[in-house]
Image 1: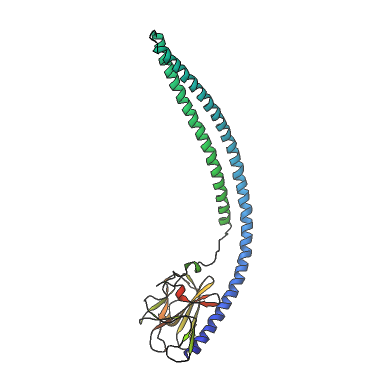
Image 2: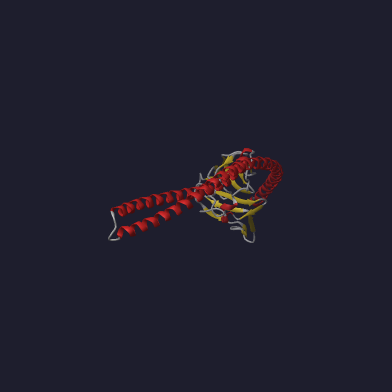
Length: 302
């Protein structure tokens, strides 16, 4: 009887998933068309803004180039003057060093040093000015590229362009939350196995069964949307959550705390685990990749 009920539930699950996938494909096609138009309009707006940025940057670049060229000339002349003054200072020092040096020679030495120091200071100032001019040109080039990228991003945002990479459910394989608020014992594993009670009979499990204490609540392992809440023939209920292309199933619930279409976060209670036919409180938990059930033990963490 339990196997018959499980097969009936599986049929319902497959039917619901197939319909969800059909609807999702239609919605995705419509979304892609709308998104393509948004992207087209956003690119036009972005190119217009980037052209404006390019024109402004060009004018500013030309002005900065003139400043840099002038700074290069000024720096060259300042270096030449500094070299000349340094040579004059050297000669005055030699003249003043002679034994017959006069007071006039000493005065010339002092004046030459002052002139040399002033020329060196001006050369440094001109060099610093040239460095600043070059840095300004580099900063302008970077700012132009940054502004163009920002313009494209802003245009995409203004036109409502979104980046849909699908559910990241798959990226969290092996790290999904535990499907109940109390740790239990796994009594049935995924796949085909000999029945634990009846000999010569195999059972096919699309998920795992976890024996838990009375009062345990099943909880969402990942953010998603309540796809369906099903009533089973034995009075229990099943909650189906959708996570992009993936589904998680929480079955054998005595009561539920969510409704169809509801958004849930990871850890949201979806219902209270009910009793199985043998009197134990058992959660039937499944993970489906589209229309294919996969082993939950490869997905959840304990």
